[in-house]
Length: 349
Ligand SMILES: Nc1ncnc2c1ncn2[C@@H]1O[C@H](COP(=O)(O)OP(=O)(O)OP(=O)(O)O)[C@@H](O)[C@H]1O
Figure: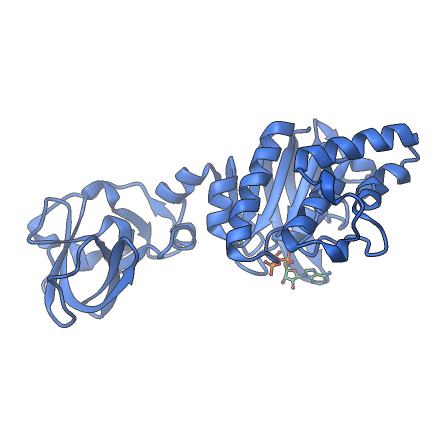
């Protein structure tokens, strides 16, 4: 277990700046996700923490000790990759024991630690099998077993679930969270899957173009996004964005409202009211999504019963005032402004 302090971290590949002055402070025992679109620098940041990539400027501290000049083996970290990287010619037992044998620990200690890791992960029955005789989920458990067997200070995971099918991913993420809580270990988890980051993490670092856009607990990132990029990246379906002046606001602002907060209504309900033409009804299990065209902008709303609605008709959509967010049209920074209702906010098609 360790706390991690990253300050002023810059990383370049040739002339390309990939990490740009990153600062992050991670508490001992926290589960942190690095989340962002492909190429934003998540894996590079993870590899810098692991010692697999050198940094150009800045510092990385574990428990207040500078480690950026140490090699990977001296950092007491463990890495789990997407492809598990198990040794095919070794049994599960030998795979898990491998990092301990490299440390030249006594065989009795190796046996005890392997038995402990196998017990924690529920894979005792698999110990004598080769990796080829395991399912994807079992291989993933073995990779985690090999990572935790030497009690690392920090567990670094680079998209560890992305090779698994959807239902197994959901099961394995619950297991990873349970394991992390049981061990109290600091985990950094790289993913581009926002749902995975939301359910697993104590805090999420949302990244774009080598810069951390926001570092906060999942619900804060969702409800109080720092900027339009975060607001659009977190939440599915994506937050609706409209020029604020369409709804009586300022022309240098963008108004944002989530589909789940926008519902059809017989008339305005005192919050944001929009009217437009219903273009599409999309069933989504217990509710339906409605796509509504408003002055050339299609917004998405949610409805629990669309039986009285059909494409082509006019609809009124309503959201509570406190569900509305504002962003600067130039740069996207969040503007901390309350939605104030006025008649002019009702937009007729
Ligand atoms: N060894 C390297 N040499 C040169 N450029 C690199 C190297 N590794 C990564 N990059 C570049 O650095 C940028 C960040 O890559 P990185 O793998 O960190 O992104 P990522 O957010 O993890 O993306 P993904 O989700 O696709 O894995 C990308 O533009 C990538 O092409």
